[in-house]
Image (tube, rainbow over all chains, first blue to last red; front, top):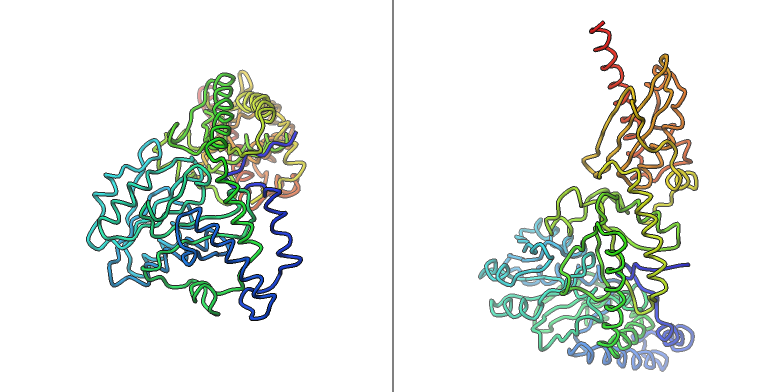
Length: 383
Length: 131
């Protein structure tokens, strides 16, 4: 059996999205910047897709700048806003659990004379508004706090944090990449100046990011060249990608609450079964204020990557943000931010479900994890 | 980034050789890696200067387990003098290569071997002194 439980990394594209995109590759393939009929056709279709996205997010079509990834969108917003408005202040506040594509540009800005201050999360992975309030200064230019975390799935009170930021006269950005469909984003009513999304996190195509901007705030382009997007992002417009983004977002928000409840029910069943079968586990991040599809579980005394590789051999795909996995040996800074005991930092697995996850798949996973943990615990020197 | 472990590495991870702890062993060693948090424990039995048996316990990633497994397999039956010169490159070669970021696992396995031999020699010295 093949079980994919790594939907926080990326998702399967919805069939309907693929179907919708296809004609934009094969028939309506014109460049929307071209002046002829084929270009005009693409332009109209692009406008329609953008209007749909704008409506869903409660913003204006003109504020949508599609990019090649969420990393690009976050880099564009953070560096673009800071560089264009440095006369207004050089103090930037971000949380200490931001994605690397927010941490990276923020760090880069410190080399240009900006001061970056980090808001800590509490042990449950949540930001207390008071922690933001006491850090806001007269020269605070920008506050960037993610809507939902990619590793532990915690959801922040973005409305409140944005309100505090705006009351201080600062600019508010949120990386909302992981938040669809759990959080109903409302740019106008929630006082959000800048927002980032990525289609592949909600069953859309890869390589399509979105930067929602506030047209009243200056921003510098990251990629300059031709005049697409009013000079804010050069490059041929990816019409099929944007159409796919719009369709995926529309589907994600259709019957939103029912879908969330369904996934949450399955997830809770899965966690309860794991707890029943294994006992010695704990959940990282707040139990309630978290994405419906996310579980980040500590399997005490067993190393995370070993669990991952063992499960992978059984057709089960999960992930670990912890040590020894992937690119480097560093322990997850997100788990460290929760002040988890160091002996537990290397024993964590993230399971992220999707609308395609079935109970049968979860039952198989539970059965196999039980064997995996038993085997690895058997020769672990940590008791 | 996919790890792309070789089939042999995966086999040693899935069915590791020489796991456990030897009762009444002649030497013991424990070592940890501060960077990745991995931990390896070794126990060893020596007869006439030959490694009669060696076993390990691991709290570590797949390659930590696989490298310790193949190392113990290779040094079993080896003289202590030869085992002291055991090179981590042998492990990498035997496994058909390791991902770059996992090379340190083979080094850690060899460090463990050196440590358990050191422990044996230190114990032996004491015995000789006592005599």
